[in-house]
Image (cartoon, rainbow, N blue to C red; front, side, top):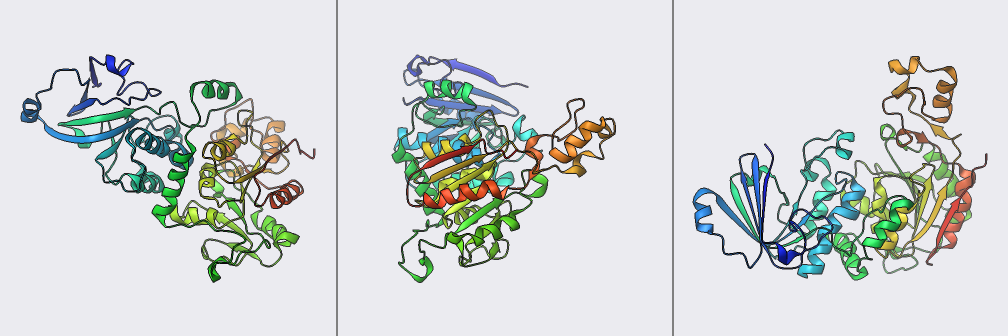
Length: 450
């Protein structure tokens, strides 16, 4: 049975059904929000201060009343993805609470609760991930941990079973993401429209957000070229380089990370140590080149990987959000071969720009598909594969080009694995070393070697 929604005298808010319905509208005015959820039929009431008082005693005779002084009401875009949760959804809540409630500190004791308009697992993006139920705590623990750093009280969603049979009274609510905010704006054709609506975020708040998360988890970004203690004996050289990899089955797995690590260690700027795999030696810092696979690491361990690196080599994936935790003067090197809306680097550069990170960027993009390694076992056992013409089979198995004549399940660029072309990476890495301790951004596109 669907929700029954009633709006009462919300002219003060300047938008129809302002406290719940308009995701781009921020309500800074004080309002009272009543959410009465009965069995599986939520009833939402939005009342302005001028509306005559609700007889809570009468409501309390039928329902249990739960009161909160303050709340944020937001929608979580693609929220079961690590990048979107850390760099967008949780940031939304923090930005609103800090800007409109002046609640910017860790573990605030104020009575504030994040409330989300979507259920923990929703259709669309999350369905593709195989998730239909369960929230951050079950599916994405780092997101739950990050949210709890600022808001110890459990977050709710508007149709939460915990609210069934209750009336929730929120005295002051801020809804939407507000005019000063950040999201990935999409490809160029939508980015201009996005930026015409939203203004730049307050860099003081972004700094507080980033530093708050680091402080909460007890992570201190490395201060390179400073020797304050034996644990911080960093010099200009050799540089510490981390190659972030993904699991094979997830796609975009780099098949030659060990070879690349050896090449990196052989560079003049990195001479001095062998490659290190982080699975067993996460906190050893003597090696100059290391390969990190983040899926099984805790939120804090992921922070440490980025905070202790001078150069991080990455490809497209949710771990791009971890640039938030890189040390001042370090370099994010993005190696990309995907066609992503004509804007392959914006997932990284927008975070660096929006959060005013003191981080350099080198973006390397190639169209060369000679180094694509499709997960052949995904396709060759499908009945549709046997029906493909020979030329499409060859293109799929040798170049990772999905067939146009038939739909193979799971056949898409995001599921392809690849090898890094050292002839492309080496000059990009040399440029990254030159950028150390400076603020530079470079895009090295068109180096196809075809």
